[in-house]
Length: 182
Length: 391
Image (cartoon, rainbow over all chains, first blue to last red; front, side, top):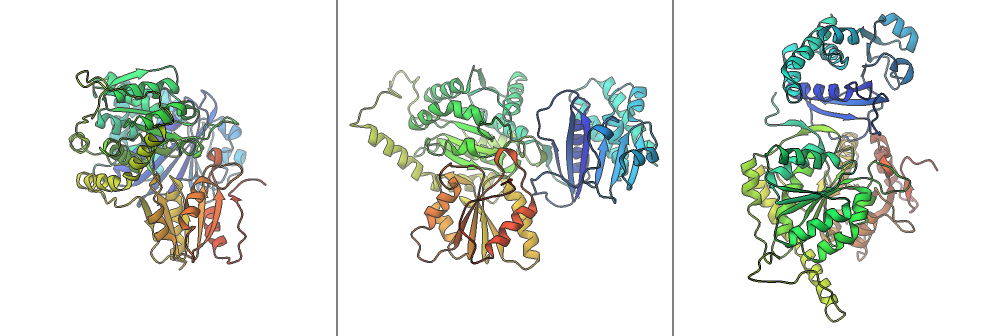
């Protein structure tokens, strides 16, 4: 079982990205959980969301303390939210930031794998404006998900809430995020 | 690998879906965290024309349950949902709903009672209703919450039961977690639930009845005994409902409680709700190490299936009962039931009481493993233990 933690600010869509990832993983035949941190949600306040992904039924209902992967949607949370908390040195820290992985390593003291992408800029260029989707794209690539599966699920889920042109912008944002990761 | 018809759904979504598929005539509810989204989703279904129900927006939970009692007495299939303070405010009318034999199905998204004010899970809210006369079912995950909501309707409306059924699911842990669940087709649910034909609807003006009147000492006692009798009919009816549900859903419910690797277990934990899932993981891990451990999870808490649970526990070495609520000045509510069930037996397991998870305090696998380790000590002192609390 793999455990993933998201850091974002209320309103940035970290919880949405977590739920989209669960949809994607289900499509891959996995068992999943996705849950936000259980706190009063306020716009702009740091929030956490979590994913569990497993080949077997997930029965555990406790919180996630030691994730293997951490995704940070808001660059300011590197300082404000202690995103490496409980993350082992074998883990992966994926950060939305214009900084290089080396800079993030120096800043956080985390010596495991650090991956950075400027998701805010990518989202702006795609027209969608929300950094959660490029970050999700990058994370899907890191987790070894086929792009087509990710795209289909994001399209299906967002189409329920958003007009077609906005969905298209988000799919573009997803794609560039995915392609950022080599 | 395929997951069939499985979807990623929150506890809110599965319960709202169950309500939609039951298609009640009336839903009266007032929003409260962590229940709000259930009624929000359901109201959306109504607004979108996906279900033909009357949603009554009221100014409090006291009014919500009052509207439910009126609606159910009139002969309408009626549902509601609440949590914590909402249930506390409803409580006066919950007793009346039970005594008027109104088969209302209510979801409770378990949340700690104030104070201090807290929005997170424990079972103090539903436990406060345990003497109210409602049937209580506790679910472990979204799937059980969904299935119990459907079964609750049939159970409540059973002719020799006619009692409200409370279906609980742990607030946040289940309500706000998106997890894998499988919903039944609408037609299958319609066929399973069937039409509700109230026996004495208040609106049947050709056969007028008086409902909910004043009762004097000459009859009050007998009327309470009718509730006792109705409650006594529940286990048999619940098993019948499970059989019918299994036919429709392909599930394998066959009891009033679930046992997990209990047959040859020496040490057992008993608890309610979502923590059972975490405990099952621990049981599997300890079994791999050769430890004979098991779990017993009551589905039905009211009426309490004492006889069956006694038989399942009697040959164990030691049993820990984990309560997620307090009864100040006494033991936990679940412990008292288990203790009472075993009280007449000469030879019985050592029995211990733990309190855990108050106000949403997380409980981890290693903490549950510690409880099993405690049980191996034949000299373990009998006193209340508080898991993970600073003392």
